[in-house]
Length: 270
Image 1 (tube, rainbow, N blue to C red):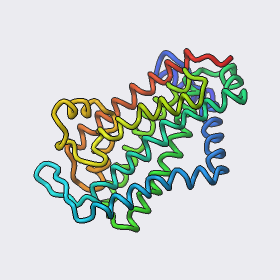
Image 2: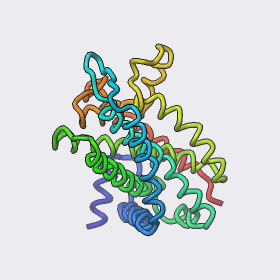
Image 3: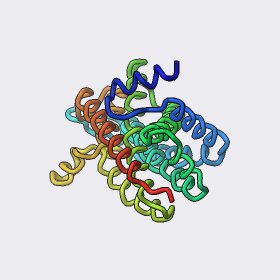
C-alpha cells in the first residue's frame, strides 16, 4: 500500500521520488518537539499579542483607507499581525536545521536512503502545521478583543492563505539554514531579510501611503499578497482582488519550495 502511494506521487511529478514515510516521520518529530517546548509556545504568542494590543489600542479610533473604503485601524491590523506571526515563526524554523547539524541528527537524516525532497517536505509539513496552529490561536484571541470574522468561508480561505504563506517562508528559512553553519549568523541574516519584508507588506499601514518607488518594491514582496489575502478573506476589504492575492501567494509558495529543495540538495552535512 505504501509503495502504491509513493508511485502515485512519482507519476504526478515525474522526476523525483517522495518517500511519504520519511515525510510523516519528520512531521511527527517537529510536532512532538513543539508540544514539549512550553516556553516556545508562550514565546511565539507573546510578541504578536503585544503588537496587536498596544498598536490596536494606541491607534484606536484611527481609520485607514483601502481604495475608497474607510476601515478602523484595529480591524486593519489583525490580518497584518497574523502575517507577522507567520513570517517570523516560519523563517526561523530554519534554526531547527542548524540545531540538528550541531547535534548530528542532520547527518543521519541526510545519509538516509530517502530523497532530499522528502526531507524538505517533511520539514515544511511540520513547520506549516505548527505555524497554522499559532496563527489560528492568535486569530481566536483577537476575536476575544475586538475582531469579528466575516464568514465561515472567509475563515477557511484564510487558512489556505496561512498554509501557502507558511510553506513560502519555511522553504526560504530552510534554504538559508542549509547553506549556513553558525546559528548567530543565521539570526542576523534572517532579521536583515524579514524586517524589510514585514514593513513593506502592508501589515501595519496601507501600501497606498508609500512613495511610488517603494510601492513597486512592495509589489514583489510575497508577504504583501499573503497579508492582503488574509485581510480580504477575514474582513472583506483589500487592495488587490482575492484571485490576484491567491494566485501570487500560490506562485511564491511553489517557487520557494523548489528553491528550498535545490539549496537543501546542495547542502553539506559533514
